[in-house]
Image (cartoon, rainbow, N blue to C red):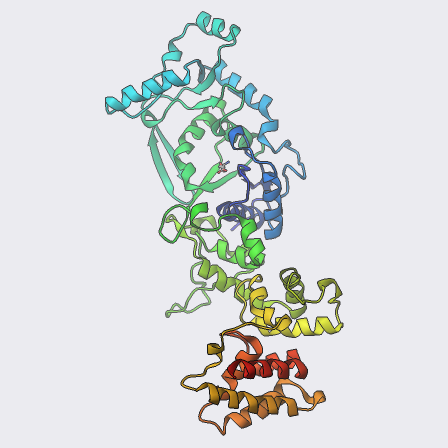
Length: 504
Ligand code: GLU
């Protein structure tokens, strides 16, 4: 496909407090599409709904995009040729264009108050009509309008929707979708507080910022015919549209805060890696299809994609129409995959913030490479690398290395063993562990000696299970040899003795 460096996409979130995970998916598709064309990706904040204003919300958006590696070329915090990129700082621009529409008789002042509009709705609903503004203010004479304006009567500006026209949205994902203008309401464009509505602001900004491709979720599709009309009224070229499928909860309802985490920062806190999140989100609404090199005989399509590979293979044409279910287990699968790929030192560095508050844990600042603490930490993290699904789990998994575990003595029990049998088994294990010379206290030596003993017993579990629980206090943990090596001989023997005492 030929590249088109004129391509400009934008991510235009409303700063409502946090970066929504669905917003990050939209931003990712915008980014991939623009960058694979050598085009530009722009961030614009749509804060025209002042009732929803939240302090710090813009920063959450900048942080989330930065974390994910979606670098924008222009935006509120970095500027650009079409600034400002925050809609509340562009009010004069919208006013000017609203005036242009009034002058062209494509829009009109409406002085109806809330009560009038509510009565209208009630009457129409009673007559089983779809609620719609009845255009009574369109009948006002020039003089009446002038008088009301001079009087400073509160008013809005409404768009004049033509009657009986079919507007076709040519969508890159959904194909041609047609709308009859009779079903459209005379949309408010400018509110009485002087702020534009989304509809006016989005069209004016997309035009002025030279956006070529408008990518957003499908809930905006029904608004698109109004936008197309506005482009026509202004005499501006219509951009390409791509309406993305919604993200859904597992029960197929729209993904919402009530049903789980939707804020990107919650995922960051839990220790998801950006690579995993990007890979997962890319597939929430898109798939690459089977590549030509892969045999079609039941082979699964490639699931692991780096950003570079996505930039190569992503296409808006392969975006699905159906809603995409957000499945945390699948995200966990991606995250554990990317955790396993990390160089150990990097994983240690990423785990440190989650470990620092553990009682008895060495100060992470002291864990400089080569130090005793660092070597221990590295061994612990290496043990966990295969098991971690999120970085934050490390804390719960490894706390027992730093503090004596507390557990119920029933956990020491392997199958049908009696307390007496467990005690004996632990005494044997203690003996074996204590007899390994300090300079040979490695997991290999421990395993050799303990397995030799285990083979004399009915099953390996008889010695290994109680020993592992004595050392870790956990139902699931790495093998006892690995734990003992990290704890050291003295601590291991001490923990086995505690378990024996628990059974006495
Ligand atoms: N401000 C809208 C939102 O937050 C963006 C819609 C659009 O991209 O046009 O969903």
